[in-house]
Image (cartoon, rainbow, N blue to C red; front, side):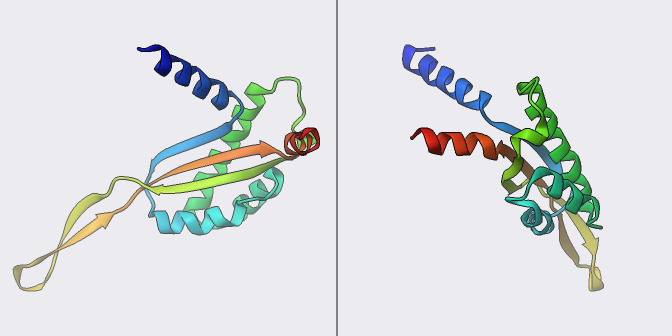
Length: 140
């Protein structure tokens, strides 16, 4: 690897240390249904988002609940000794991307067949601290 690639890789690695996220790949529900639930929690405090997801009856809400808990655990691992309540965590970004589609065939009248696409999605949740943002604004 060249020097330029090496320095770029090091910069990216340092930038990722300041990001707190969790990713779920190939979740077996359509991206459209997952986005409906993801919009409910975008920009909310983490405690409120967990409460919303816990009381939403969708299948997608269960998956997002576990994913958000995983993102919180990732934050705690990188910030040992810091209380979650003091840092005012919130859901910064929720990205729902289309995953692979399984193609299936359903019999149709007169010997024909219809194609059925069983969709899946990839979800990425980024959380951040409101306290850290306030200090960034003050220092500039």
